[in-house]
Length: 352
Ligand code: 13P
Ligand code: SF4
Image 1 (spheres, rainbow, N blue to C red):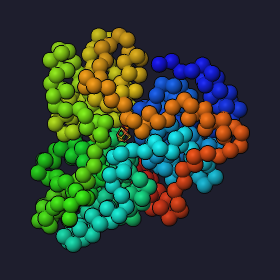
Image 2: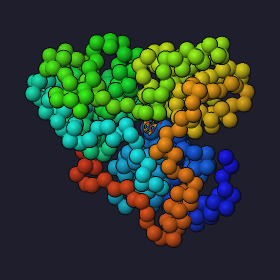
Image 3: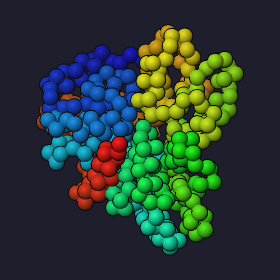
């Protein structure tokens, strides 16, 4: 739906008043009404780098979810303030790994006598606490656009990887991109004693996958892929690596949100695409390419509800508050957590 013209005008005026003091970042899953005010758009990796590259901006307004704003706070300087327009914009996947659960897991690995061989690799979609755990144990962060490089790096440091919290990204990267077998992977369930695994299983595994997932991408099934191939002959199936392994295995192309956009930009006129990721992005891509047929991979509509919490009214309130000198919704990571989380994030930024 078109944005309310009054709110558009207010956002424009507040942003103009702030000038270079504010920098607005927009993740690709944000609504059109929000994306129109982003100074830069990107996937998680690009936005983390772009936040760090704006030392002159006093305010970084992050239109995305909580873990992205935390990462921006970690990577920006002390006097820069990172603001999340709605504090309820979390990520259910990031919530699936708590600091206590991960500490307990490390005890289990220690008990099994393998902790010294394990390198943690944590997906960007995790809390600052989990990133700090990763930094403390000499691991790295990864995003969906560099997971393979992160795993290659990790296997140069140790024999095993503990991959948190998205089991699908971990499994898909290991099996699809790096030639490991499904048997090299085990799933650690934080709700079961010892993760539901025996010490023998842990010792035999190369990839220890945390039992987390994204509920948005979890909706795509092998049936969705087969169904769209029947409906649209010649269709290219393009999915995000947070989808289940069988979906990724049946797809033609797999990659991050930025990759999805670039792939469509490069696609020839007349080509047909079914995209398995969040709906705001799929719609925007479809609108940008009227010469191509672009459909959502599933027949049922699916937004990321927490990404969608950032809407134009919240953005207007945020920008107007900042323009009036009131700092709202600041996201701040404490000093010690920041120190270790930054080690892990910087290791990611330094990956070849
Ligand atoms: P990207 O890094 O591909 O932007 O993914 C972020 C995300 O939250 C996907 O669900
Ligand atoms: Fe989290 Fe999934 Fe939403 Fe991405 S799409 S922010 S992983 S819930």
